[in-house]
Amino acid sequence: MKTTTYPEKTREMHNHHFDSTIWNDFKFRDDDIIIATYAKSGTTWMQQIISQLIFDGKEGLPVAEMSPWLDLRVPPAPVKLEAVESQTHRRFIKTHLPVDALVFSPKAKYIYIGRDGRDIVWSMYNHHSAANEKWYDALNNTPGLVGPPIEKPVDNIRTYFLEWLDGNGYPWWPFWENLASWWAIKDLPNVKLVHFANLKKDMEGQIREIADFLEISVDPDKWDDIVTHCSFEYMKANASASVPLGGIFWDGGAKTFIHKGVNGRWKDVLTEEDKEKYISMVEENLGKACGQWLMTGVME
Image 1: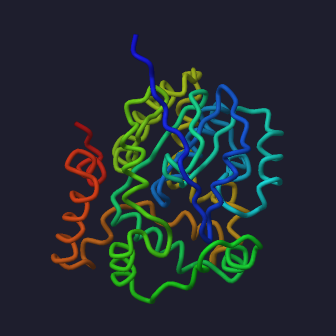
Image 2: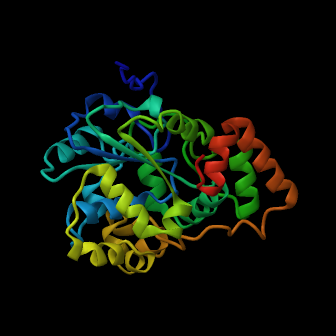
């Protein structure tokens, strides 16, 4: 009989956003759901989808509060751990860590969302450039910062992309290792990979697959509500419930955080040389199969 081997934590990650040590004290429950992404890959969308599945299409759910980013270093770990321990609903928790920097539990189910790195950076640039002084103060002046602070972005999105590409995720965190670590465990029974492009193409079909994976039985009469409440239009109109602290960290509020939700905005900005460089780096760092999935959502 083949024994399933689960990954083990081998390191800690710290920067202006991360404190991975919180996972060392997190107490898993048998039905926990962990939503993982590099970032700006559909995390908030997946949080909304899972909240709708758990709560049968209910409106007005405080999703950002219900589904915290556990390894974000603010608020302090004791505050966050106490909050998630007190939750009585099926927990769905967010992380942006690679697999080897968190505690992986056979009890939990893990959903990793992928998205083409070029689309990620376009969303990140909006997120970063719209951040206000409260955002910088929370990240850079809260005690416990390890490493350099995060600074304001350059005023040119192509330059921002090239800095991110050449700096392996600068000024955020490494990109290739994040994706590769989750791709490596995609065949584990409690792991599911979802791609942003596939959610855009067939949201209802993808939600049904997610419900099956999470073993959530949905009342057929609730499907229309669930699909409606997971649409970009609905989430944009009701953004304050999905965005941390109602969007106070961004100029324009929560609707700035949930920006456009589209792909391909880089096509008329990057040069052909830029595009070729990116594709070359995808293959070099991820290999053919993972690279194809990253850029297209197609998994062979």
